[in-house]
Image (cartoon, rainbow, N blue to C red; front, side, top):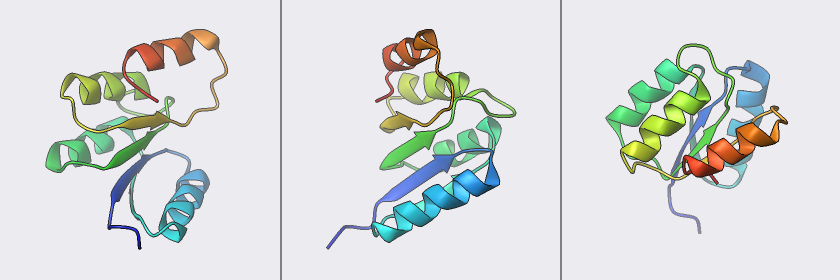
Length: 99
């Protein structure tokens, strides 16, 4: 049995956010949704997350700005979910501490 793990899904596209939430829930984890970088930071400052799924193209704070704040605080592991294909973006995300 899977322990109750809290996963923050930061994705501004409602359909993608819902799909990811459904997948996370099917795996017996607890999803929480944020739809902007600013909203994500509110949740991140409120509690510790077992995992954060982070889109890079967000309204408010960008995904890169959110990632910098998360890794600077040593908060939670982050997996980037993004349609961006540029190698530079991927490398920068890894340097900032994403998986």
